[in-house]
Amino acid sequence: MAKLPAVFNASKHDGRMGFNVIPAGRYKMRIVKSEMKKTKDGKGQYANLTAKVVDGQHKGSVIFIRLNLVNQNDEAVRIAQNELATLCDACKKGAIKDTEELHGVDFYADVAVKAADSNYPESNVIKNYYTLEKGKAGAPKTKVAQQDESDESEEAEADEAEEDSTDEKDDSDGEKDEEEEQEEAPRQAAGPKRRIFGNKK
Image (cartoon, rainbow, N blue to C red; front, side, top):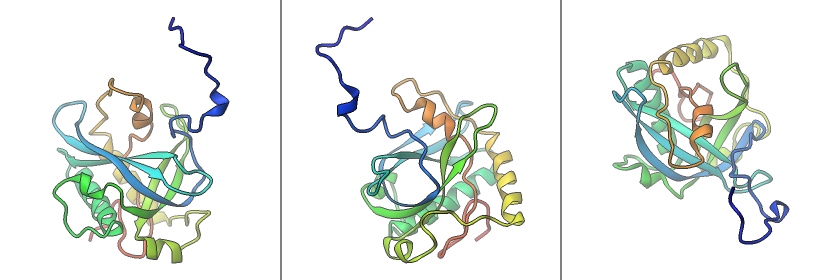
């Protein structure tokens, strides 16, 4: 038991940690935190990026981006590199040495809702990234375009690659559960600049 110093009225505070699932659509976002973590088996590393919605009804909502940049599975690495390249394009960064260089740069992202399964509840995933100019003038902002059968095949391939690299448990803060919910290699969506999550450059 922990006695609080005063009565806490939850209705007077915004948030709920930003881990709520938001509707599919296009959102203005920015990276607010990033770090490299070891995979559970200790043989790989992934970049864990925290993206936050910066305006609109769902301002403050958080989505985690997990990029398997060091992995024994070459396909998982290729997918992660393609996604990171697209994110760099959206942030107008030609080359980076540290993920911190992506912090604080606004971009648009197509967000989808990943259905719940036997292991994880419903969650959000990012399908594509755009610069502010292209994102604002581009595709519909309330619904992510559906993928064709070839896209679905590539997503299945990405899922199989991801199974070889699971998330290391994070005991340091309240992000652990949400990171585990987001545990899946990113999937492909059409974008005006480059197709990611499985397409060869």
